[in-house]
Image (cartoon, rainbow, N blue to C red):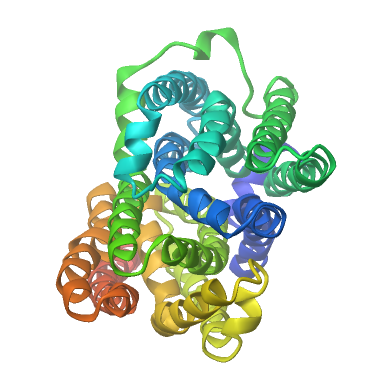
Length: 455
């Protein structure tokens, strides 16, 4: 099958088959991406200690910020490109590739350099103490050295999937994860490098993945590939990328802000080990959320292409199937949190205090998970069809508009329990709002589809 027929199939193929073809590699790839931090947590928790886990958790806001810029360019470019491919505008699609690479290089360098200059001040602001700052500093300094590799790798991986290569995107991510696991074992247990070894393992693995992606886009036999003329920043393309990418950007920025508030709240109500427990809870929740993101990424090229081609019945069909799949995933997370929290917590640590606090957090935080999948898919859906403002609004509601006020209200009253309970409550309110917006949009699609059928 040629590259051209691969993209055209998005508008003609059977929806379940297409979603399976695109979503399964994306799910594997996104789960693999989650394993980066999860592997680091397991290796650090058992190979370095409980306080090192807290130090790793303190680095999460900074990693989220780095991911925010990477997602803004990568997801924004891939969403815009899928719409252009649906319109059969391949010239613009190629220019989007070049602009995305240039933006990733520029932003990756500026972000990494800026954070390195103020690293200690940033980490103390995030909730570090004198006991944990050393671990957090050592880990983040190495990751920031390789920040450009991270940005380019994640950005090109999104575009690789959009241009009809979901399996290759998955294989490259799996290569990075396997490399990371092997290097973690060598650097931490073999060389005794501790948390620094975990950081170097991540950077080297992502560099390997980036090289594999660059090789793909240098191949002129593919439909979308590097040519000299596409490496020129174009104002219209940049605005399009940033407008669509603003939703995932703000989602990651607000996630960073929320983690900062939670870290400081737990530091005041429980101490350093409570911060480590939150890190464990967040990593478990992230596994299931990232599977849903994988479903979203599988949906995105199909939704974008058919929206660009004005095939609204197919857009609705993809959406329904995506919501069902995402709900099944988050329900499984709910079951683990309710019935097997201690077993899950033991994967990270054997410290009895950390085990107990992690178990409590899992039971509460995952309480509303059966409805979280719907909210996440809905937010991504508006992004995929270019409705940036609705996507941004929904992204902000779950983590900023509802969660932060709840944290500020419940923490003084219930202490650490207030921190835990603020999360499922905000998830519930945000899901109700997402349902209202989606029902309204669904009715508009029905009206457009009916108007096309009129003589």
